[in-house]
Image 1 (cartoon, one colour):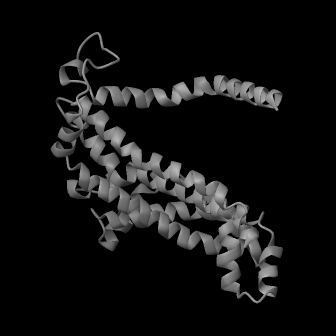
Image 2: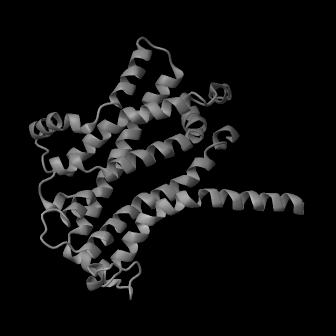
Image 3: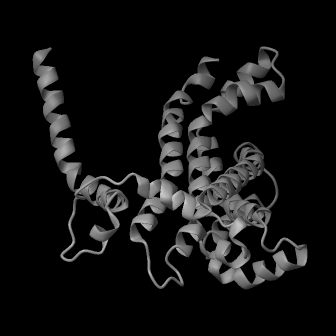
Length: 280
């Protein structure tokens, strides 16, 4: 037993040592943001620069929040990202289920069409999307971003989900039907619990794509009340004669927290859904 534990410990230490350079590269930008955000203003512009602050000025976060309409931007980003994710999953789950379970004409062509849409950059469609949004009367509205983000993510979500749905045995649903379950009961109590890992990953990618998007938001939105977080953070830098970098770093760090929290929460769902449907 001790030999097995020693081998396991050595293997863990080796893995952590092998991954440490990657961890340092990933953590370094966040460390720079954090230490810059809590520095006194005079130290931010000092030369040569210092890595650590002489004192931690937590007031910078309060000043940043009050000096900008950060709360409005945070609410707008949460609304846009969650709404786009909900609409995407609402459309993508039935479509992916149909692709995985049924055979119909032009199924291969439809899958190829989904793949081709992922090769188009949103920037190529900016002019057309802008004219469409103007025609719909949704310019300078966060609802226009919800529709745009959902439209861009639906094809990606269908492609991801239908590949995973193929791996779920149909025998489990058929067993539930033979025991008297309806089609809807078999779908909700057997199939969807087993699909939780794929749905969680798809929701995470959709949320992050909507949360971080900048170009389309900058094109559609006009007034500061409707800004999302990427535009609000950019407004602290763009067109400014003097840039308050401690405020910029504080805003950037706070803006990155919701995506990190969502990822850590959904990470648990990746394991819980693997066998729950089969057990039921």
